[in-house]
Each structure stands twice: as structure tokens, then as C-alpha cells.
Length: 401
Image (cartoon, rainbow, N blue to C red; front, side):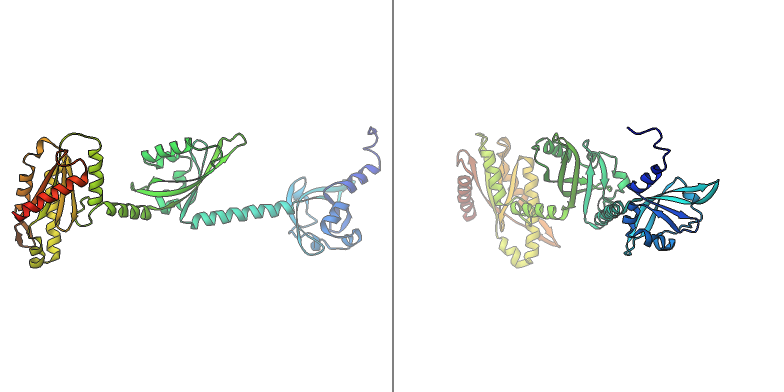
């Protein structure tokens, strides 16, 4: 047990002073060190005799007047001390006046070593500054979302890339900036995630502030609590609009004729197979070849010939409308697959009239005729290949006639 008179004993202050875990020093009004405990000596790298002979300014690196420490009375403030070996020691200081007979004789100072805390703080600030620098300079948008899908952070470059300031984004749900189909895909995507699926890549459209949509590929990192619930979502998204448009263009050209913008043979065959596999009704397939098209190229040049093909394609599309497919097989050869059984009776006559109507190209009036071959599903064949083959035979018979 602690005896009642222990606090008033002569040895209590000595014990407290020497064994305090923080550094403690006693200085007079001129800044001369009078006492120092073991923690202070270890903190500063001095022996007691060395410290007692060391001037205030050689130890206290902060700009503090030792005769006027009342401003620090009972306040905890941060100072910088100079270690005996020359490096800096960061401390949190408390100053208490040392009074005898109502006269201030000096100051008792307590030093809490915060050097490691300072170093950690600088490290964290350095990491934060580096992160901000990367966020600002990166061509990717870095973002953080709450479990409810609300933005808690977005990198400043969102202003350049999507037109929004960070203040316009933070605090708002992500769905505000997505078109409806992207929100549906994101919801399905998240609901299908396994509990261990923490890193995924998602491609979708985002709405620019000017109203246009941009394609973004976003790498998503899900942060979970110990129970597996998602508590934060980190996203790094990059604009892939140019790449996406190039891919779509390549895919489009793979199935379309670049001159007339009509479906090519591959797409035509694919569409016809899809129809034939689902119906037993009668349909019509027509192969069409322009007569003497070579003469147009030879007389007016290939550029006029190309413009002629474009006009013929437009006329054929107008006649067929939504009731069929018009494709260019190559050269001056077109093919038509017509769904409308009732409207196919005078279809060839309408096509013939449309082709033979004069076409004016660069002050040249061109008159064209065509040869057509017709085959009917399922009478003349039950596949696109057989229908094309029979129509081809009929077309050459018509051309020779």
C-alpha cells in the first residue's frame, strides 16, 4: 500500500522526476540547464554534465526565449530539439514555471518525443501528395464509392475528361452519370460477384457533361469487411472511346459494303439463314446484275461508276424497305431477300422500273437496265446456298435473253 505521507515525502519528487517516461529538464531564466532526467538525456544524447554545460541555443532548435516561457504555460506545443550528434528531435513540450517564494526562478519542461510520429506524418503526406499528383496528371479517372454507390472521391482530372468538377461528382450516386443500360449492367454485374471476386474489369458508357457518351474501361477493386460485405469500391477508369469506335467500325466493315453501306455477302447469308430456320412461309430471293456496267466505267470513269452503284443501292433499299434485305455481293451484283409473300408479285417489275429510271451524275444522264434471277423458298431450295444457286442460273438466262 502507498502510505498517506508518501506524497509529502522528500523523495517523491525525485522519484517522479527521474522515472518519468518523458524527458524532463529544469532551466533557469537564462536558459541554463539545471537538471535533466534519464529520458531527456537519452532523447538528446548527452550526459548530465555535458548538458549542464551546453547553452540553451545548442539544444533548443526552436525560436524560443528561455526568459519568457509563460506563453507556453500548461500548453502542449511542438518544438524542435538538436541532438548531441546533430540530428533533429521533434518533441511535444509542456512548460511549468518553477516558483520559489512567489518569485519565478525558472521552468520545468516536459518533452514527449514525437519524431517517429512526425516521420510517419511526413510519409503519409508524401504518399498523399504523390497520390494527388498521380490523380491530377493521370489520363485515368480514379474514384472511390461508398457501399451505396455514392462517390466519396474522384480525381481532379474528371474536369478535363468528363467536364465535371470534383465537387459536382462527390456526394452523388454513380448512376447519375451513367446511361440506363450501363446502370442495369452494373447492377447485374455486382449481384453476380462471388464473395472472393474483389478485382474486376467493366466496360460501359459514361455521360459527359456536354451530353455525349464516352466509353470507359474501369478496373474495379472491392474492399470488404471481415464478414465479406462490400464497404468501399475503388475504380480506375480510362477512356477507350476511340478504340471502341475503331472496333465497331472494323466489325461494321466486316459485314457491310464500304461503298454502298449495304450488307455484304457474309451478313446477307447470316440473316437469310436466320429467317429460313424459323419459317415455312414463302420468301423470294433475287439476284440482280446491271447490264453493260463496264461501259459506264469505261466512258465516265470509275468514280462516276461508284456514284451510280450508290444510287442504285438507295433505290433498291427504298423499294424493299423493312420487308427484306438488300445486299451488294460485289461489282455491279446485288441480291435481295424479300419477306413479304403477298407483295412479291410485282417486285421484279418495280425493281426493273427503279433501275431503268435515268440517273443524273455530274451532268451525265445515265440509263441502266438490269438482269434478274428469282428463286423462291421453299419451292426452289430450302437453304441460302440453293436459293442463290438457282437464282444465279435464272439471272444468266435472263442476261443472255
